[in-house]
Length: 498
Image (cartoon, rainbow, N blue to C red; front, side):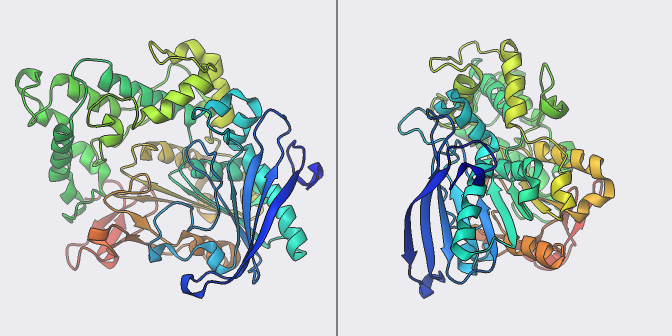
């Protein structure tokens, strides 16, 4: 590949290997050529972008680019189900390669051997690739290969991703909209800086003061109390809280206060522990505005039925190896402080205002302007869960509301946003399985927008129960009769309907 083939600065690229894989009828996989290659970084000290592309012999003239996860650094093969690392329940649909799609993914240009997690950010180009430029570089390189292999370009180009991959999906819509016909973003990590700073703030509340941590027994106490109050608010006692706004009104953490507010047993909460939960369940306001006017984030769904483990870290409560700490520590050290020896001790983001704002403009996907994507017929599907402790529903809601304010009622011509009760960060009490790629393809190829889609639960204990997939701000309410495991016995209702 020449530098002219790729729309951002590189030193070109090359295919390192290509292997023809025989069809595997038992797995439903067709014959395809698996090619691996690299896009050479413009800065010779930055990592190359390593990619894999799968080229089926019988091609449907469509391609799917898969997003990454976390800090990237691992090549996404494109051989799994869409959007990439959600469960492989049959309701999710066959992997795109099995359906005749060209599929591909990359490592995002952040693979740096055994270097500490996130340390790539000390290199400007690697950080830019992680911010979203790898989306464009990977896409352009692979489409060049596709064109040379088949003698034609894809008739439809899709992007699918979740979490960091969902962030990259919105990068595709906001920055490179001309390149894509359809995009799927599951629980997109839209607002990096606000997320990281809020995680650190919550962590400080839990561990920076004596007694702020809730042990597993107290975590379970909170969970049981929330579900005891709120599970029934959607009309069905089924282990899923769908009416989360009704739960906000119905449940008070004060009901769990220990006598005198002093920690006395695992059957109640101290004032300090209640304050930890209040911190997480309240909006976190920043001292200054970030890109696109973002001034804060939250609340997190700690009092809406979420699993508290990501907040409370590990059972020992040391906060050094699990939970939020593994996410915010590298960003603070390598992204914000830009210091391999940076410390979290007494970290105050206000001292780094210029850098935080710079990173916000580089990393965040809070821009509601997707004009170019919409004007050429692009379609966007966004999916969010109510119990996501990494990407809170409030964050995705706020982004969708900014888009809705920009486009008005016409937004439904090119965006559909679904919120799923009990769904978390790719898991949850309701573990969503939905063939979103078929829904997207029907919409883009045949102008058939999703109509009354149904979500399937992939959890083994509740496998195959279904719910209507409701467009925000609607939620599924039980009609009062019929099997509570069947979507047909629920209807999507609006705010204030109980």
